[in-house]
Amino acid sequence: MIKDKTNPWPIRILPDILAFGIGLGTAYCLKWNTTDLVWSLWLCSLALGYLTLLSAICGGAYIGLHAIGHKGLKKTQRMPAILIGTVAGLFFLGFFSLHFCGFHAVHSVFLQEFFPLEGMPRDGFGQAFMNPPLLWVLVFRHLMTPYGLFLIPAIIAERHHVFLPLISAVRAVQMGTTAKDTAAEGMEGAHSKNRNHMGDAMGRPYINVVRMHLLIFFFAFCHALKVDSFWVYTVVYTVYFFPWGEMKRLKQRTGNKQIQPIAGTPGLV
Image (cartoon, rainbow, N blue to C red):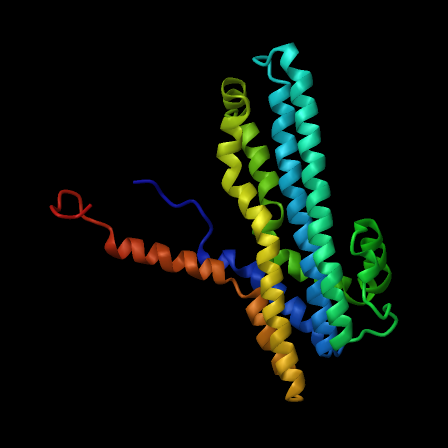
């Protein structure tokens, strides 16, 4: 029997509880209102989503560098591999920078219309629609000071997703499987081993965008009903920080233990 060496469930959710406490305490101590909550979530969606995308790109680059340096790769193949890898990395970086940052720039225009923030341009960050560097300059100028602290609990809550692609790539190389598969299969082996993590990294930021949209609709509904109390913040932070993934995994493990077949029992697969 193989023992489960993972940490007990209560220990794994301690960081989530800490993030919940920091986030809720920040909102309470700084006396945030609905506008503050909306823009703090928008900032987290942009910052953590972009970090996740960068993690995936860097993970692919890390694998590519080790594959190119492998002794099984011929010298005549290295230069084309370097060129192809560089072009692919720059393409993904440029594409997702424009698409992801541009989406948030447009989104900020609507947020500024319904939840105006003092000192921010009238059109939000619409002027940075196709200019990611300008968007980040405006973000640091207008949002980082009042809401940057909220990134701490947010990155704790998203710790399993933000840097997972890069960590998975490093572990694959350290295990010695990536380089061998790359030399034998022309990088296809490494790609297949990390495909799930890379795919999750590309999709996770957009999932968070959808979640942010739902929370903003909730904010708008509460604002229309003039329900702007601390209990609203509590509900929002519970949705945002509660370890729903750990609960799902715990339920799955419990269910598997209950239906686990006994050795030698006929009719059970």
